[in-house]
Length: 369
Ligand SMILES: NC(=O)c1ccc[n+]([C@@H]2O[C@H](COP(=O)([O-])OP(=O)(O)OC[C@H]3O[C@@H](n4cnc5c(N)ncnc54)[C@H](O)[C@@H]3O)[C@@H](O)[C@H]2O)c1
Image (cartoon, rainbow, N blue to C red):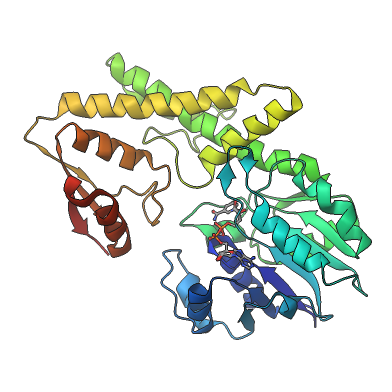
């Protein structure tokens, strides 16, 4: 606990969860949000988040202040600021322009009297944080890169039970300060890894790159089993019981998708190419993921009749979220519908509305809440 307030810029899917958990630990938080409609919902504590715990924690919150004014978190009573603004994918890895603008705006307020720890939680391309580290330091802002290892639908749970904490910095004492606070949000005393900014950026992407490779591997072995009349379930169960392999992310299912895995896998390869190294494994993983989706489409076309209705319990990239981005399930449903099959898709009111807007009567819809 501290008398100081904690600043947090970008209380979106991830940032809001961090803000709510900080508040639960007794930290007054000043959260800066620029989307006026969303800001109004946060201020009114009237949010319809699909993320478990979030609506409840927000309605119970008492010491979070939401504002659109960046200056509100740059006053002297804030000596630690988290940043969770979007860094969407582009053809150069990530688009850092929103993050850069936030950092420039922070710096335009001039040198700080007391040192401020600036914790960037956004996903960035390796090397990005290094480019602004010394500029920030000259104004008494001390950069710590600390990405969270979370999944949509379990963000609060993952923040409370992370397998590890990761801190990249050029000044360890500020990373230790960040660790002390982030660790208070956890319930499992995770190991903290401290390293340079670029090492932490690579670690974050490499972890997701490994997981995508593991998912793609499990699906490829499953497809091979299915192709050869073998039992994919018992094969993967047995492979996973080798402790060097492990069961997590080793079951047969849809290919990976969503806002993080595919783009982090691609971004690490983009970064690798920039250094003159080709990360073959990242390219192979992406191709294997596409091959698996094509395999599933072909298999469904073969094993169902033209008249049969094919039902999708969800077409979001995983159940329990409203995210359709890079959803392999949606890709399959679309491919089958385009082959003239009758496809019924189920989803929340919000998801069904987005599908109707984009695909009209291509599907039959079922609203499930
Ligand atoms: N959501 C995840 O599961 C997840 C996982 C790992 C990493 N990340 C990373 O965390 C970062 C945030 O991701 P997210 O999913 O929470 O994004 P999000 O889009 O849900 O939230 C970002 C929020 O920042 C706000 N914002 C944009 N510009 C702003 C500005 N100038 N000032 C204040 N607020 C601003 C947006 O309106 C939005 O509410 C990204 O870099 C992402 O890659 C997210």
